Image (cartoon, rainbow over all chains, first blue to last red; front, side):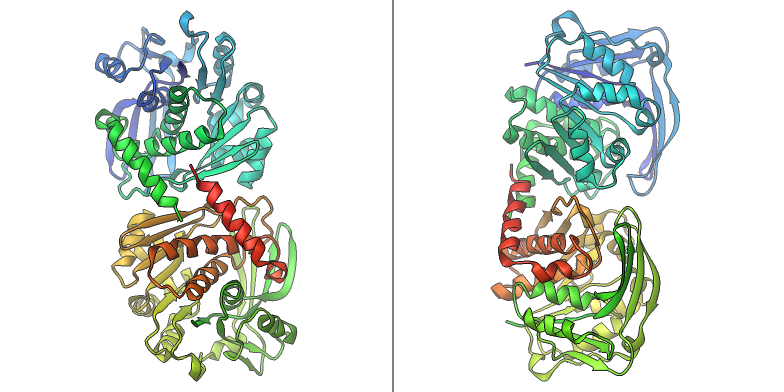
Length: 300
Length: 300
């Protein structure tokens, strides 16, 4: 039982119709490992600068996240700035300052080389490949990516894709990667390129999960007050993989279905407040209650 | 047990990536009543010109549609021309020739004035109001509309909305009508304007159903070969109301949930071929089989 998450731990500056937040803690590794921490004790592998708040590292630890893979380096933490439109799906990146992330060489602590699950969150596919090479016979490898790498590093990305079991993508990304506008066809194309499972995240429309012999659809929780959608997809993946690690199951359809619902549940919580704020107060009880609501939402 | 459908019976000329079709039979009344005909014997109220094919009227009859409300008038049938992009949600209207529809004064045959269910498909809201006035104490009134009327006849539309029980809309339409970008909030706003149920159709993402005390989400069937999405929304509404008419239930949550799934099922069939072609071969057995697949699609 061990889950390794390689991603970014960063500062985000966000402008949304609900307000502006300067340099709040974000990053795919952050959202993913915090969401996973409700199910298991993940290891986060990332690099931050000396300006990264120690309280945040303490918060990771308090949630059971193993931070031995979180390197602190001289320099500044990765900083991303974005603006959201009235429709929270409309997001424009204003600035990306890589800072210490520029020379990031992710290292797996020795006792994590035999980890069961390795998640390659959205970072440069070459780095994803590096870290994957350090893992010894993981039972499950998952990856996420963004349009930037699909456009600029397609070949590297396809090499990583070949080696993973689960590919997480949003609808726009999978259409671009598969060069196919029909989501089901796009998903099936990816299933021929390596992964045995494709998880297509569709924001307010939920997610579609395509396995080799099944399709599962999960809705998004009907949220009336969407404050900040940053990290929703990473939280989905974190909860999904955290749940699989907890139940020690990697390919069972029944567990994949439940994992997807927990993914949608955690994504639905994180968007209720800015950044990771909602995770500070979230309880297991709330998660289980919402899980049950998801059953009611689709029962007929 | 009686369902009245007022809508358009028309010729559609469609240009899609799958080919072009000239003047095939379409219209909201057509799709809606044919979809409903798998559950009940609906009456269709519309007007066509003398150029409308008699075989089509025979086909309506063979499916159990009562065509006494289908007036044949000197002149040409309503003709709509549209072009679809690679993404079937991108549709551009090229031409609208109202023809005999221009002076359409819908009349309810006397024995239908006591109909249980009246569906006002997407036609001019003033006509919707006229026909509603001819109905005597219907148990359920439903309506649909399009952006055109929301933009040009908002006041008339709101007057009809006040009097209906169910409002069918797609996501773009309901956002425009409610002046609200969050779908759940938009739906709740409409629930304060008359209807006790709002059905938001979201194309490939399925539909959301908002009642006064519940929310239900139904997925779209994962279709790989989408040929022509024309009439999918009308088929949804037709199956939904046809099922409610069949089971003689108008407000029971359990029946509303099942009706929504049948709506999604019929919509998923009609898009598999051009126009109403798929309805020519569709069997009840196929409908029930797909209904069961929908259960599997969301079970966890």
